[in-house]
Length: 525
Image (cartoon, rainbow, N blue to C red; front, top):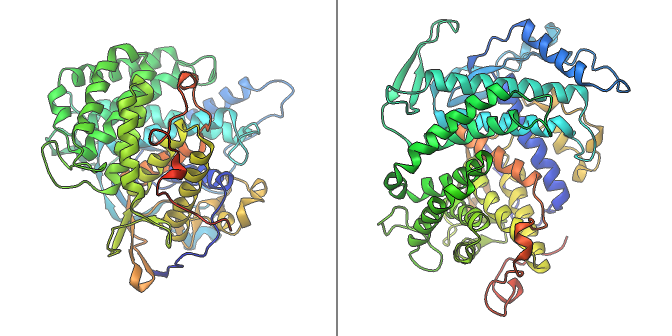
């Protein structure tokens, strides 16, 4: 599909509105895939499970609160997944029958499903479900300052239950004889008799690291009785802790494999390893390993912040890889407090920023030839800008980085159409009336007979002023990666953490701030 591309001149949303959109896009991507799409092996939840979750919510409600009633009284059907497939078509399969049934069926077209199950994809879905469950425990989707509704709390319970089932499924079905997670293909004729065929015995370290991170997230939420008493399950938490620790133990004894990863894989792995170390309380034990991994990223600099694709290569990595590397080094800096990593991150940002095109508010090739962005590319660059904002203290730097992030978000996501946006969101001027929405209403999950999720990619030919977008290309990995970066943007704190408060405000060069170097200059609308 081809869209006219407005070359500049559009109004850039504020940071507040960008966060609102980011939250709702994160929610629709995770919720639609996990509970509505049917793109995977179904979980076959019994009515008893739904009833028990409802009882758990009702028993936890204070006496003065209104009874939750029937939280599953939606006008659409729920289809929890036990495992997610890698690719699908986000078109609603039976939309024409909606008016003839009591509840809408938002399952996707099964005609173009690829029934491969990739451990990293499954881990991303688990992580997304856990983060959304954590959010919905306390806060509403429409206003973080408001308490979540009983229906939102119930969805949180259902998402967490799905994540637990998926975590157990991965451990039981996605490992090879050596215990490594590998890609499999669903050959089951009946979902109550699961038969998976190994697609590739090749060990992908990112699969192991993503699963380690997912298990760490499940452990963290299930054992946190203070913040999430309704989710608390000590015995279940210990299982996931043990599984995460087993993978961590393997990584620490396979260091050389990590150093030989491609730059895009190494940069993606470092934040996952750091976050897992924090979740498992292994900061001190993991710090030397993290230092060596970040140092390896730094050693791949060719010149001027450019990174090589491989350990001993000379080809320059993609912009998306540079974004992931920037985030990795910022996370490494926060974890180790080593200034060298922050300095390396600044150099990478300067290189990325040199590719900023103010006409279209995207990072482009120098020659402005055909430009292609996948959803994961967008998530990688948003993650990079967000990572700098998370530690920046200079007011001018914060202001300009926020403007650049908002402009990029609007151009890469809203203008491109890569996120199929619900009309109820797209039609709200500046998101001012967002409180009038029902975040669990059917109209939030379907637009133009398609589910409201991230598509795989878009292409731009600037001289033609057109965007080329394939509305039938959906890949779980791209969509979930981008959605999780949006969730981080939503929860971003502009003020530095307690550990960072002891550090002098960083500057880009000695005696200079961001105003003194060539940087994006966005005009106020």
